[in-house]
Image 1: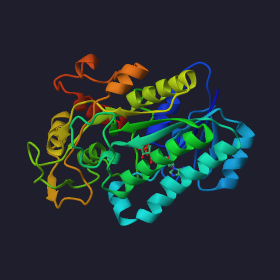
Image 2 (image 1 turned 90 degrees about the vertical axis):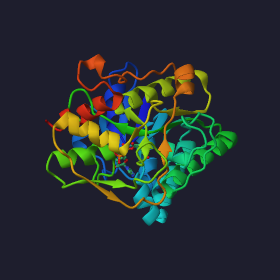
Image 3 (image 1 turned 180 degrees about the vertical axis):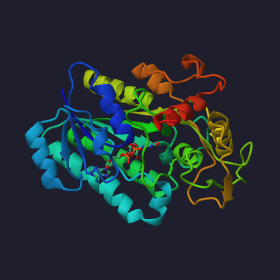
Image 4 (image 1 turned 180 degrees about the horizontal axis):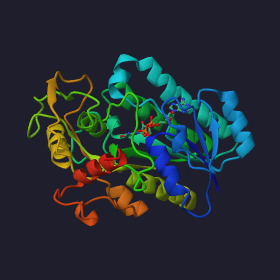
Length: 335
Ligand SMILES: NC(=O)c1ccc[n+]([C@@H]2O[C@H](COP(=O)([O-])OP(=O)(O)OC[C@H]3O[C@@H](n4cnc5c(N)ncnc54)[C@H](O)[C@@H]3O)[C@@H](O)[C@H]2O)c1
């Protein structure tokens, strides 16, 4: 099967490409405008098309040249804060861009679509861990762009027979075991790399946005999931979609959450650096707690997290999931 991986030069997409390229029976084509992705993360021998999903002419050329059987869609603008400041830019890239992609898929009769959705569609969840069937109520433009696409997908199935899977992931973290690729966003907005930038001497302190939330230490709680586990979930989702021909959405979380302060403390332990922090005002649109289980993905896709305990890798003394993620990041940065 030919799989078009849109956004395959980015953080999660590049890890998917690594995993997918080890499987039999898939030919991969990466499409990316390199606005945020990295050319060096594209493995040798993988076909690459530099293009923007908002450029329909380019999309048509690529679809007619490669004739993909399925599309995995990682392209998006991904920062909650930026989306609050520039909602139009976010709807343009995340919603309009996806519409163009779906239109071209329809024209070229490509039926299978795997979509990178997000925990941010749930806003302030009423139940934690967030169940797979929780009602989406996004509270920021970023989350809303993803929810809008989920609705577009449902109506497109109804109208055109598109078959899709929405993978709603929580905070991706960690790096590839080879150390070749990892998280490298610019500007970086994710907590773990920001913390590690302090340890690397690249920034003076890490900001904590709000310490008066109703959580155990007042800081926000988030769920962290290893990027390679996300990649394997995509591969299982693709296999499921093709075999069962059934659309579905899945939460991909760890069922565990850590406060911002806990993550910073773990990083202090792992790196031995004092990592100064600075408490700032809450950011608009940040829910207090985001944790999800992965019941549906485990039951239907047979997916299980591999990177779930630090003991597995002998990385004592920190016996918690997220310390492994930290160490994964840390190693990837050559420390
Ligand atoms: N990183 C996370 O923790 C996280 C959590 C939940 C959901 N997601 C979703 O997963 C997907 C991938 O996230 P990521 O962290 O790998 O982000 P990323 O920025 O590293 O990757 C996105 C890639 O898409 C490309 N891209 C963006 N807009 C494009 C366009 N218009 N045309 C062509 N290419 C374009 C970028 O150049 C980049 O390579 C996104 O859809 C994001 O919303 C990420």
